[in-house]
Image 1 (tube, helix red, strand yellow):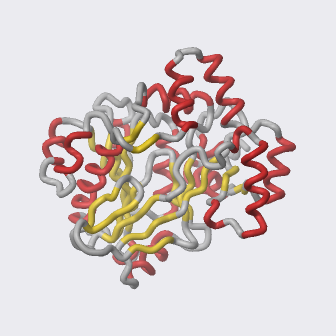
Image 2 (cartoon, rainbow, N blue to C red):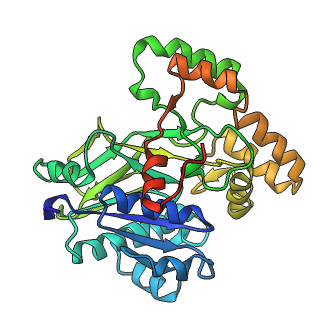
Length: 330
């Protein structure tokens, strides 16, 4: 692999469970050189196992890491939030990983979560980042798709879910009326995207003075940043795919505030999910999952696929199954 095309991944995770194996196998198979996995829970049962995986550096959230944060450029603005906002810890971990990856000789670092995959359907990862190295871009933003589960019981969503909502920003004008109609008439698509719409990013490690700007982008604290949006590579986001994944996500988040950082309003779907889990009533939570997240009506799914409101992307599942020696379960 050309040095110009070497890229690594940074992820902060907690309670990933068995999907972690597919996350690592997939990204190794498509050509990422290394993964820096920051375990937000010091007692995470996957920590030791991940540390033994080839091409993985597993880092616990311990006193050593917290001490290292203090030397980071973004620490003064994030210090007050590190115990209450996971996004503050994510940003510090990204900046710390930038130093690790730079020292190891990698050229690019992609920041994603453990329920996301990098998807470049028409270009190998090494060639993609090698091409970027030949440009003046310092960071690249990747638009994101959002997965749509079609049933309640899902073990490994990377292998069992292949239907997605495409990024609205990429929708052709002819599709806009269909998107609006679906959002108005289908509860599971209200809103169309339940979570973020602004993609995730990779940073060029040879660029000076860049730091995380939230969990989606990078910036230079003083001056401009030369950033572009990708048109051929994307992020596939698999949030709450399976009832247990939904339950675990919001149980882990717990009694989150109504506002991020104490100032930014949290969307109503996120708050409704929080509240139904905090009720402790699994039957009520299961009904919410069925009514607001999973689309189990196969005829409706096929209709939405036919209209372009949803798309099927089987490639990640196929790559994982080939890499892990499995047969298809879809």
